[in-house]
Image (tube, rainbow, N blue to C red; front, side):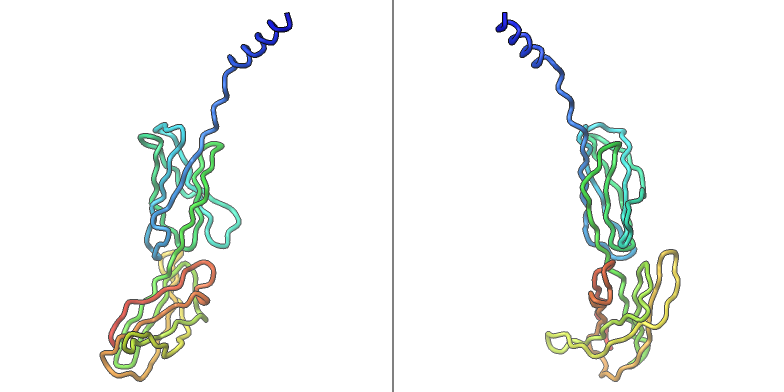
Amino acid sequence: MKKLISISIVAAFCAAPVAAAPPTLTLKAAPTVAAYGGSTTLSGVLSTLKSGQHVDILGQDCGQGAFKKVATVTTTTGGAFTYAAKPTMKTNYQAKQKAATSPTAAVQVTPTLTLTRLAQGKFNVSVTAAQTFVGKYVVFQRLRKSKWVSLKHVTLATVAHGTKPTEVSSATFRIKLPTRLRVRAVFPAAQAATCYLPAKSKVIRS
Protein backbone atom coordinates (compact mmCIF):
# COMPACT_ATOMS: atom_id res chain seq x y z
CA MET A 1 0.00 0.00 0.00
CA LYS A 2 2.83 2.38 0.92
CA LYS A 3 4.49 1.60 -2.40
CA LEU A 4 1.31 2.51 -4.29
CA ILE A 5 1.03 5.82 -2.37
CA SER A 6 4.67 6.67 -3.16
CA ILE A 7 4.12 5.93 -6.84
CA SER A 8 1.01 8.10 -6.85
CA ILE A 9 2.89 11.03 -5.26
CA VAL A 10 5.74 10.76 -7.77
CA ALA A 11 3.27 10.55 -10.65
CA ALA A 12 1.38 13.60 -9.40
CA PHE A 13 4.62 15.56 -9.04
CA CYS A 14 5.73 14.68 -12.55
CA ALA A 15 2.35 15.67 -13.95
CA ALA A 16 2.39 19.14 -12.27
CA PRO A 17 2.96 21.96 -14.79
CA VAL A 18 6.43 23.55 -14.75
CA ALA A 19 6.33 27.33 -14.27
CA ALA A 20 7.57 29.19 -17.33
CA ALA A 21 10.78 31.14 -16.90
CA PRO A 22 10.15 34.89 -16.57
CA PRO A 23 10.93 36.87 -19.74
CA THR A 24 14.32 38.56 -20.07
CA LEU A 25 15.74 41.38 -22.19
CA THR A 26 19.13 41.94 -23.76
CA LEU A 27 20.55 45.36 -24.65
CA LYS A 28 23.68 46.58 -26.39
CA ALA A 29 24.87 49.90 -27.82
CA ALA A 30 26.84 50.45 -31.03
CA PRO A 31 28.94 52.49 -31.06
CA THR A 32 29.71 52.79 -27.35
CA VAL A 33 31.37 56.20 -27.91
CA ALA A 34 29.41 58.97 -29.62
CA ALA A 35 30.41 62.51 -30.59
CA TYR A 36 28.28 65.27 -29.12
CA GLY A 37 25.26 65.69 -31.37
CA GLY A 38 25.70 62.20 -32.78
CA SER A 39 23.76 59.01 -32.09
CA THR A 40 24.17 55.40 -31.07
CA THR A 41 21.92 52.44 -31.84
CA LEU A 42 20.49 50.52 -28.90
CA SER A 43 19.33 47.02 -29.81
CA GLY A 44 18.06 44.00 -27.93
CA VAL A 45 15.78 40.99 -27.91
CA LEU A 46 12.81 40.03 -25.72
CA SER A 47 13.19 36.37 -24.74
CA THR A 48 9.54 35.52 -25.52
CA LEU A 49 10.42 36.28 -29.17
CA LYS A 50 7.01 37.90 -29.61
CA SER A 51 6.50 40.82 -31.94
CA GLY A 52 4.26 43.79 -31.17
CA GLN A 53 5.42 44.06 -27.53
CA HIS A 54 6.11 47.49 -26.01
CA VAL A 55 9.56 47.99 -24.49
CA ASP A 56 10.55 51.11 -22.55
CA ILE A 57 14.02 52.57 -23.09
CA LEU A 58 15.40 54.13 -19.90
CA GLY A 59 18.32 56.54 -19.63
CA GLN A 60 20.48 57.70 -16.72
CA ASP A 61 22.54 60.79 -17.53
CA CYS A 62 25.92 61.31 -15.89
CA GLY A 63 25.45 62.59 -12.34
CA GLN A 64 21.80 61.52 -12.10
CA GLY A 65 20.74 58.99 -9.49
CA ALA A 66 17.79 57.40 -11.29
CA PHE A 67 16.80 56.11 -14.71
CA LYS A 68 14.10 57.97 -16.66
CA LYS A 69 12.04 56.78 -19.61
CA VAL A 70 13.27 58.30 -22.86
CA ALA A 71 11.23 56.30 -25.39
CA THR A 72 8.95 53.32 -25.97
CA VAL A 73 9.66 50.96 -28.87
CA THR A 74 7.82 47.95 -30.27
CA THR A 75 9.36 44.53 -30.85
CA THR A 76 9.50 43.12 -34.36
CA THR A 77 10.12 39.61 -35.69
CA GLY A 78 11.74 37.39 -33.09
CA GLY A 79 11.24 39.90 -30.29
CA ALA A 80 13.94 42.25 -31.60
CA PHE A 81 13.88 46.01 -31.01
CA THR A 82 16.10 49.00 -31.80
CA TYR A 83 16.29 52.65 -30.81
CA ALA A 84 18.49 55.49 -32.08
CA ALA A 85 19.63 57.30 -28.93
CA LYS A 86 21.32 60.72 -28.89
CA PRO A 87 23.17 60.99 -25.59
CA THR A 88 24.35 64.50 -24.69
CA MET A 89 26.81 63.22 -22.06
CA LYS A 90 27.88 59.89 -20.60
CA THR A 91 24.63 57.91 -20.30
CA ASN A 92 23.61 54.49 -19.01
CA TYR A 93 20.71 52.80 -20.80
CA GLN A 94 18.36 49.98 -19.86
CA ALA A 95 15.38 48.34 -21.57
CA LYS A 96 12.30 47.41 -19.53
CA GLN A 97 9.24 45.31 -20.38
CA LYS A 98 6.84 44.67 -17.47
CA ALA A 99 8.95 42.96 -14.78
CA ALA A 100 11.94 42.35 -17.08
CA THR A 101 14.87 44.76 -17.08
CA SER A 102 17.94 44.41 -19.29
CA PRO A 103 21.55 44.79 -18.18
CA THR A 104 22.93 48.32 -18.47
CA ALA A 105 24.56 49.53 -21.69
CA ALA A 106 26.89 52.51 -21.20
CA VAL A 107 27.61 55.11 -23.89
CA GLN A 108 30.44 57.66 -23.58
CA VAL A 109 30.35 61.06 -25.28
CA THR A 110 33.15 63.26 -26.63
CA PRO A 111 32.52 67.02 -26.76
CA THR A 112 33.04 68.77 -30.09
CA LEU A 113 36.36 70.62 -30.06
CA THR A 114 36.90 73.16 -32.86
CA LEU A 115 40.05 75.15 -33.65
CA THR A 116 39.78 78.02 -36.14
CA ARG A 117 42.51 80.27 -37.56
CA LEU A 118 41.25 83.87 -37.57
CA ALA A 119 44.43 85.57 -38.80
CA GLN A 120 48.19 85.12 -38.69
CA GLY A 121 48.93 84.14 -35.08
CA LYS A 122 45.27 84.50 -34.00
CA PHE A 123 42.98 81.53 -33.27
CA ASN A 124 39.63 80.67 -31.74
CA VAL A 125 38.93 77.45 -29.89
CA SER A 126 35.53 76.19 -28.77
CA VAL A 127 34.13 73.22 -26.88
CA THR A 128 30.53 72.22 -27.55
CA ALA A 129 28.70 70.04 -25.03
CA ALA A 130 25.68 69.96 -22.74
CA GLN A 131 27.47 71.96 -20.05
CA THR A 132 29.70 74.99 -19.83
CA PHE A 133 33.46 74.54 -19.59
CA VAL A 134 34.28 78.18 -18.84
CA GLY A 135 37.35 78.23 -16.59
CA LYS A 136 38.65 74.95 -18.04
CA TYR A 137 41.52 74.94 -20.52
CA VAL A 138 42.48 73.38 -23.84
CA VAL A 139 46.04 72.70 -24.94
CA PHE A 140 47.26 74.25 -28.19
CA GLN A 141 49.82 72.02 -29.94
CA ARG A 142 52.00 71.99 -33.04
CA LEU A 143 53.43 69.03 -34.90
CA ARG A 144 57.23 68.93 -34.81
CA LYS A 145 58.49 66.13 -37.03
CA SER A 146 56.36 63.22 -35.81
CA LYS A 147 55.68 64.50 -32.29
CA TRP A 148 52.97 66.82 -31.00
CA VAL A 149 54.43 69.58 -28.81
CA SER A 150 52.28 71.61 -26.40
CA LEU A 151 52.73 75.37 -26.85
CA LYS A 152 50.00 77.01 -24.80
CA HIS A 153 47.20 76.38 -22.32
CA VAL A 154 44.14 78.39 -23.39
CA THR A 155 41.48 79.05 -20.75
CA LEU A 156 37.91 79.02 -22.03
CA ALA A 157 36.47 82.43 -21.21
CA THR A 158 33.00 82.85 -22.73
CA VAL A 159 29.92 80.71 -23.30
CA ALA A 160 27.17 80.93 -25.92
CA HIS A 161 23.87 79.12 -25.46
CA GLY A 162 22.78 76.95 -28.35
CA THR A 163 19.65 74.86 -28.72
CA LYS A 164 19.04 73.40 -25.28
CA PRO A 165 21.04 71.76 -23.74
CA THR A 166 23.97 72.88 -25.94
CA GLU A 167 26.61 75.21 -24.46
CA VAL A 168 29.55 76.48 -26.53
CA SER A 169 32.54 77.49 -24.39
CA SER A 170 35.24 79.37 -26.28
CA ALA A 171 38.29 81.60 -26.23
CA THR A 172 40.25 83.68 -28.74
CA PHE A 173 44.01 83.83 -28.33
CA ARG A 174 47.20 84.96 -30.03
CA ILE A 175 50.49 83.17 -30.39
CA LYS A 176 53.57 83.87 -32.51
CA LEU A 177 54.07 81.09 -35.02
CA PRO A 178 55.53 80.60 -38.48
CA THR A 179 52.95 80.00 -41.18
CA ARG A 180 51.90 76.60 -42.53
CA LEU A 181 52.62 74.68 -39.34
CA ARG A 182 50.28 71.84 -38.47
CA VAL A 183 48.44 72.72 -35.26
CA ARG A 184 45.58 71.34 -33.20
CA ALA A 185 43.79 71.73 -29.86
CA VAL A 186 43.40 69.05 -27.20
CA PHE A 187 40.82 68.97 -24.40
CA PRO A 188 42.43 66.83 -21.67
CA ALA A 189 40.60 64.19 -19.65
CA ALA A 190 41.14 66.14 -16.42
CA GLN A 191 39.29 69.13 -17.93
CA ALA A 192 36.49 67.02 -19.44
CA ALA A 193 35.89 65.55 -15.95
CA THR A 194 33.59 62.57 -15.41
CA CYS A 195 30.76 63.19 -17.87
CA TYR A 196 32.83 63.47 -21.07
CA LEU A 197 35.80 61.88 -22.75
CA PRO A 198 38.83 63.96 -23.78
CA ALA A 199 38.71 65.43 -27.29
CA LYS A 200 40.98 66.57 -30.13
CA SER A 201 40.25 69.10 -32.83
CA LYS A 202 40.97 68.61 -36.51
CA VAL A 203 44.49 69.51 -37.58
CA ILE A 204 44.74 72.88 -39.34
CA ARG A 205 47.55 75.12 -40.66
CA SER A 206 48.85 78.08 -38.72
